[in-house]
Length: 264
Image (cartoon, rainbow, N blue to C red; front, side, top):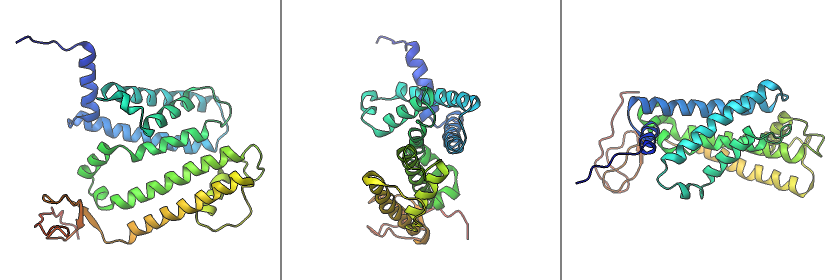
């Protein structure tokens, strides 16, 4: 039997994989740090959308761009199917966001591109699984949290689209605040009429905001009003969610043993 010695690259990849996929305390802390980075990045995007460009903002752009690039590169290094990763929307989203932070884009031209970073918070399956383990609040309110997050992402992305498509020719859209105001009034179908999007493209954007916005509002209302459920896979049929006080699985009748945290 011939002993094989791992190459330096394999050793480095193994250590990175432990950080991104391992269940060690260090790996868990690292992934929580990445979650914090994602949240801070989104907040930075929101805040700077309303501020004039400055040297300080541009410097922070580079810092965030380098951090996101490092994270993106690390994920590619540990990927078991790197070529398949480039068929995913999330990979191209990250690439677009990195370019928008690091490339010398004029003015607010990269603003809409950066809104795509908000999608990152909704796609990390491993982080969601970890939150289910560590946070009773997240387990209890997962559907509501995701409904709120989906609605917030939609509002933010559509605000970016409205601003980037209207700022050059629509005097009513002078800044992100105007675009946000229009998005919210269209989404809630309030329609005050003080700000409108002219032309065919403007009307299509308005229709998209109203249709998808109402859908997301209904999803949020359903999550808020529906009876509370607990995530506990049935050992027989695999049904994931059950009533908190369920004794039997509704799908197959199997006796369940759902842990009770003693609340209420």
